[in-house]
Image (cartoon, rainbow, N blue to C red; front, side, top):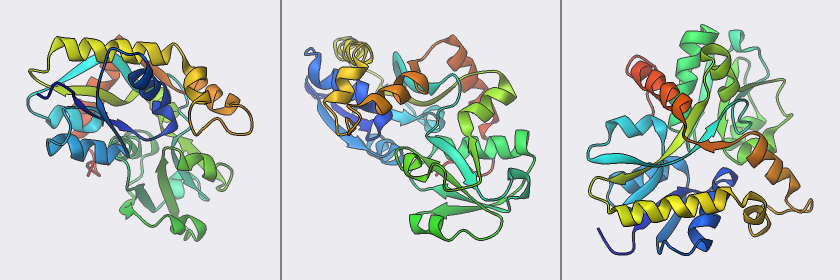
Length: 256
């Protein structure tokens, strides 16, 4: 591996503390690339980066890869930014359009459709977000990331996937994990751990120095990061991931 590791991280608000830590803690020199979740996975799989914050759904299929650090993008309750929205109750949904930026959330939607909502919808790929402005009867949309903030209140029904998972399993959820190729030096992974700790301990400072500071001085972003996001990859989240991964092969749709 190169002396300066190439790192891919998600380009959403929920990653701001990680980015702040990598850029400000001081012990990790890195080529940091910010990408949507699916593109983080593509960059890692193609060898463009050595370390990545990856959608949890893809991790079991990656050879020669280790989960590194005790951090993740997770939620112990409602996550707010991973939702299925519709003007129909979920029981009446006939089609679900799947956010093109998502991988884990696609598979989690399939899990909930089968085990909680008891529906078998048609699965469609959502690349044209203007479809949100003209939904047909029976349509629902899986949305993830910052775009969810813009859609809040637009639909009669909104199903928070982390909250739905918690209601079904009584477990938290981890949407994205830090991974590195086997053989990555401990010096690098330890420096990454220190950097992430630095950022998670300074969430408000991270918001203030980001594009999310806004007219409220970052209070809304800070509230989201401290109320909805749980950054610790603890034992309960490991249990949740095992349950999710064990069911994955039986779930439609598969992540893409």
